Image 1 (cartoon, one colour):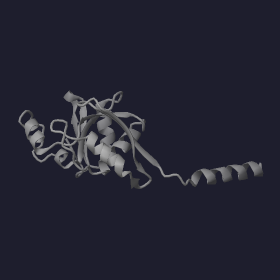
Image 2 (cartoon, rainbow, N blue to C red):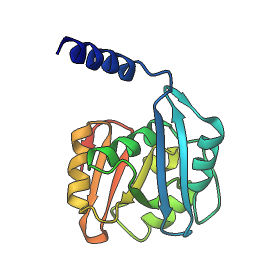
Image 3 (cartoon, rainbow, N blue to C red):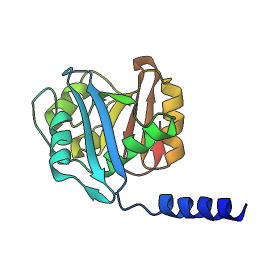
Image 4 (cartoon, helix red, strand yellow):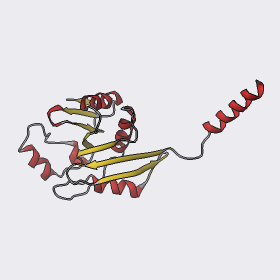
Length: 169
């Protein structure tokens, strides 16, 4: 019995001490461009610069093609959100990433739900849904993370998440 305990303890020690950094991955589908991206964007506490550039291009303003530098905390939020709904490898449908001021004004002229100073224009926000996850459940998971703004658009079946101040609508 003593040797079993020692072996278990030794195994636990070896498992607990890992030299490999934690991998952070995103799987995305863009609903407007029909593009897909599966990418490791962070290893341990280090962002992968080429992956961040690829994500920024993927999340470009689909109306103008303009690419903007994103706050990488948004990518961490998406990664944590997939984990919090129980499927860290889930694909996220992107409805809207970065918006130029022109695109924001265009959308604002058609909907009162578009903020004049939207964080989409600072590349700090994203509108998403997850196939197989009820949008209300996704909203609740985002709210529990307390990492920024969360908007719920039930009739359009998506949520807005951002890394600005914590708020909800």
